Image 1 (tube, rainbow over the protein chains, first blue to last red):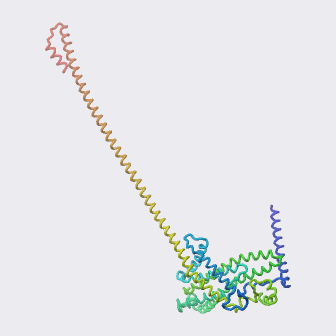
Image 2: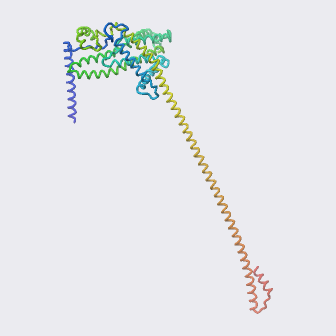
Length: 278
Length: 190
């Protein structure tokens, strides 16, 4: 028994080593063949914004693949939240309970973080959450276009949040909103230094807010594409298919988590505007 | 990053890509995310999308879902309070039942006591009747005994008078009836 199990251990270790060696070898082969121009790595092609109909320049009004996938996101949202809830059933259908789940999650998040007065802004936050979630998940479909992988999109969303929160803060609290930067809990000599740090971190918010989302989505899609490029080589294709599967699973997780993170950060920023006194 | 490489490769592979198709039928040069000429397009369509989504949510979906949730909450709390009512009613009914049971028990006890008293009365009456009968019979017997006794004394007197007369005659005397009677009477009464 003991011998056979140690044998099994030894053989599995051997298999692992062999697999590792094979992968390394294949990577080297792949590099070499790529150099010779047989393999094509174009992980960024999927992000190109191009007109849906015909060729030519992309004007602001042109209907592009971005337009199409944003429209599909709208369609998905309408399907889940509008068509799904049309029964208005006391005992909900599957679609309705999913819609209620999404509603309840975001509603509770807003209420928990911003308090009851934050619920006035719940529709805006729900809009952001729905758009990002659906865009992320639709972007995971093969041949699709991930609208949220673009800094133009996430940047606009983040700037929308930034300006909305800043304006709201000044409208609600006037100059008291600046108290956000003046940490009264700290000793007086430290306060100017902390104020500088707070101001910097406040203005970095939209940058991190937008790049976090776009970067995550873009990186995941690019990595999947790189592995897909390796799949063209017969020798390493099993490994690369496995890797694509694993990363795809991870990306499904990331798609939701990033939408969740974006929403929760929006709530946190909104709380700062509603209650600036820490 | 790999972007420089892709920049270079972009033009070199353009012919091959026409065949391979690309993912969107287009060739990436550098990071498409930084192609600022596509920004107005994306921003415009994003704004349109956000307005449409906001409209859908705020006009249709969210009021409807929150109404459904509130409705359900109302139904649940209504059902709960109804259940509470029923529970209270059941408790009342149980108390009433207990009370009826106790009442019935005391009533039964009263009836039992009454019946017992009735029976006792009957028994007492019967005993009294029997007692009086017995007393009457005893009195009757006593009077008869007295009669018999008196009868016996008379008979004894007669026998004593006869015997005394015979004894006097046998002794050779003359039987003076009145003297004998007086002597016997005197003796018997003595």
